Image 1 (cartoon, rainbow, N blue to C red):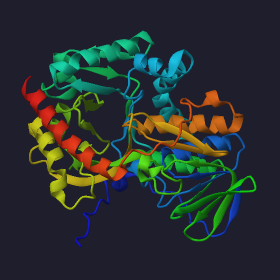
Image 2 (image 1 turned 180 degrees about the horizontal axis):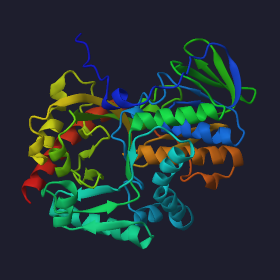
Image 3 (image 1 turned 90 degrees about the vertical axis):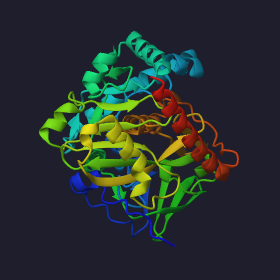
Length: 432
């Protein structure tokens, strides 16, 4: 069988500060809370628990930030896929406004944490732009901006000319800019969270896969591949796109889709000035969206959906590189320094999910392209809930673990939809 295409080093692994030491768990320990997964959600939860005097132990199968937290595009985007009015209708007059307020402030949490803990994280907060590739997308974008404006958010609609000035090409018909957003070096941020958690007294153990989860005499026992175990009053599962079979059927509630990215070699000053001159990050309105930005080393990076399987060669990134040069012809010949990917957890309703299937067990899964901000804030909310017992501390009510029907076939359906949606996106763009 052919070896998989190497995904390391990614741009982020090549440019992040060194990771703190997180040695594997060798001896069994006790804790108030055991957190499984050292991504944004798990690390934020543990950090905020420690700040409340609650002893937390974090178990990570690889190293902090190894999964989606260290492999995403580094776009810090507030909100969810659904607009505020939709969320209030979906969750009612009590929960709905609370949820909207929560997601409105998720990006704030990222910069609060970076500043408070003096993290070594390259970052810029100049906003996030969502652009319309077709006339059909202009109305929804304008409505989305109006809904956030009504709630006091610093957002603005940009016409085609203003959009071109901000982006660096004239292929979009309009956009809106959300000045709450920005960019971070995502692996540096994950490692910054780990350092802050360690400094607060959290024990973090990398290269320690959790292999079993049982409840005995009112306590949870989390077994590991090394044989050592953590005994805790509570457990938080925060494994998202890298979820395994630790809890029955949880893995079957999501599609662990691949998101692929490329990054150019450092660009010349002339080219840099012609692309995203205001330093914003961008996603567009395609059904299978593209996202792109510049990084702190002067590289352009673009990401989008990849095949469901693991990559086999550079051809698996060809669709992204083609779109990159189609949008920005000045990038032709710039060269690609990095190609990488990571898994994201796609839920059936495109919303994050919380579950509490047994006493003392809290599960958080699903990012929907908002993981940097969403999961940083979700970790703080989960810590508040654990400390207070107040169910309203959680932005969403915990629901049942509901496996997707015919989960194995869903991956095939998902890939088929990706192919079909790409065709529709190309058709809509050509109609402009």
